[in-house]
Amino acid sequence: MVEGADAVRYTGTAADRIVFLGHATVLIELEGVRLLFDPLLRDRVLHLRRQVPPVDESVFAGPDAVLISHMHHDHLDLASLRRLGQDRHLIVPRGAGVWLASKGFVNVSEMDVGDVLKVAELEITAVVAHHNGGRLGGPQAKALGYLVAGRHVVYFAGDTEMFAGMGGFSPALDVALLPVAGWGPKLGPGHMDPLQAAHAVELLEPRLAIPIHWGTLLPIGLARNYKARLGDPPRLFAEHAARLAPSVEVRILRSGESTAVDC
Picture 1: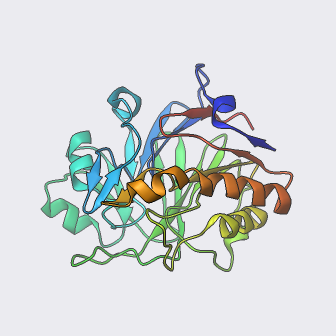
Picture 2: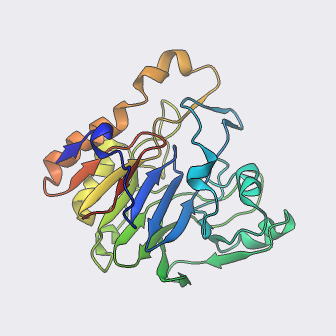
């Protein structure tokens, strides 16, 4: 089943919810714990410009931990991390911690594939991601995805292409947050387009799939030609998923929208 963004706007007080903040930035609230993933909270990074309004700071203020999937500038943005506070608990791929400490961050936990870390009542497991996660001209660290488990289990894929074993996560997933596009008209290796992401849903079999990594950023000069197409990837993803995995519900959230984890 596919629901449009208006159908899933969340305005209640349920304990568990997911907020899409644009690009790969997601706030997951489970059992009263707030986890912020790959925060990109400003209107520009390098040659990329935000094409949708920024989300009010009150939405993402005060997370219990910030998780970084990899070190690319659109996923690990130092200005955004400083905005959250340099004593905020950062959870990052192994190899990124020393570099972040050199930038003044004082509460950093590193993880590698298979590592498990607890934040309050939630258990976070680092899982494989097939993506070149090093920083251009800077430190190198592998990319990660994350499983967050409490009474619900949420998979945050970060940036990845499909890989052997993608459907083997245990326990069963309630929610899969999957990238369906990039930040321009071309999509390089280590990513999934809408059809590939739908095949991932077929493997993962979550109860709910939410597309991320779409509709937010464009390189300077491309807005005139491509801005009108920013909504295509999640729409195509939902269409493919309805055909390949009809039992999985797809919810498309626009930047700033949220939905209850009610599956």
